[in-house]
Length: 304
Picture (tube, helix red, strand yellow):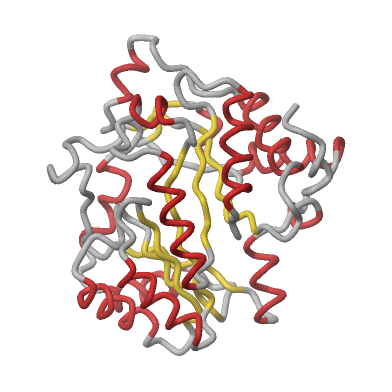
């Protein structure tokens, strides 16, 4: 099934704006994370693995990575430079300015996506991103929130609370920089009601984009040991697709969904096995939306 029939995907949004297919090019710019280098903590979030981005480290420059990625993606003529790995605002502002300029120097790059933590977004970064938006680039500040519940954030060793996210969003709004919130469904101890509350609080603050992920257990993360002991159980495909579809129905139609699931390649992925490819989740969510209502169909009907 075509997901674009049921929800406002990033692909649909970009095709409407640029009149052609636009693809994201994932980049590794050599950043680390304050939750790994000792500034906030060591070891990172319990679900995060250093192996996830290890393949990108061999490519030294942003420009070289862009050229390599474009050669892999044959079905697009325009691209978004996506600074994905780790915390992509965790450097001096002038260094960030240089890296973002290198990425946007390619004439077929029409936008900039920057993934980061809510507690690593100084005003100087927002000023840079606002400047690109003023030039006509597609710009997204992708904030890894995962949950609005401080107890959950502490449990997964995020190193920040919901207040940091609320502050980053408020300042991004002042600069006119669109925000995409990353949310993980199925975190340890979270109930369906808690996931609905996270989603509702994100919408209440205002958000232009959402990225949904299932909890995945991958090699190299500290949660892998908890999974081996039976202390963490990732969501089933049925449970995940039902919750993701419900949250999509509770989302206003203008909000852009950058992703509705996630994958990990072998042998990195430990569980759940349905995350080896994107098709099982995409098909299941599309079926849920086709049967029960499209994006926005539950807006204004309460949290349930």
